[in-house]
Length: 166
Image 1 (cartoon, rainbow, N blue to C red):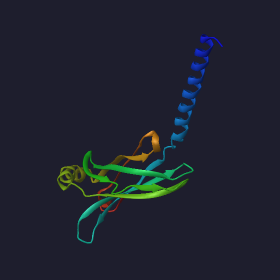
Image 2 (cartoon, rainbow, N blue to C red; image 1 turned 135 degrees about the vertical axis):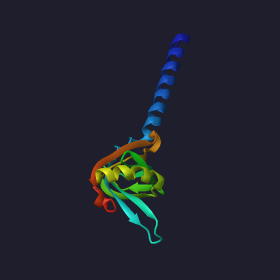
Image 3 (cartoon, helix red, strand yellow; image 1 turned 180 degrees about the horizontal axis):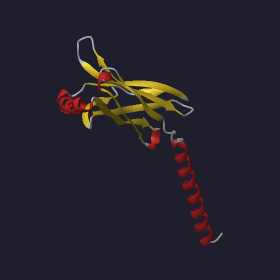
Image 4 (cartoon, helix red, strand yellow; image 1 turned 90 degrees about the vertical axis):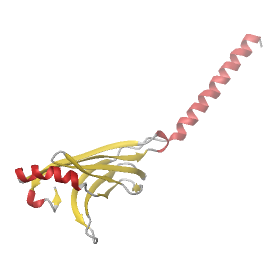
């Protein structure tokens, strides 16, 4: 075998080994999960046993994957009359069961100073315009986190303020 043939054989073997290493590395990453669907079901004003007022944001989350998926964070902002009055966060990570729908509740204490600023507009209109926006962070295995936005807006009569926002 000539020196040129040996060099060509060495280059070909090196390329085959490098290709195998790259393919093995990609295979170990696994598939990126399909993004779960996140919907705002409701926002409710709740009063605790100690008298403190909170907003409870209930989310419907649908995991379309054939395996469990971890939610590492959720953040939501509640706005009334275009005024941000509360921010809710997921207190601890949760796991969404495979091919299932889950209900997740997150709670926030309202900023009463911000709420007072919106109160004048509410009284003039006798209705409340509200909006909930946010995102959920899904642990997408080795491919990095996935950020899923969600939101809902609506309006309801002032008399329903202490009840459920639809």
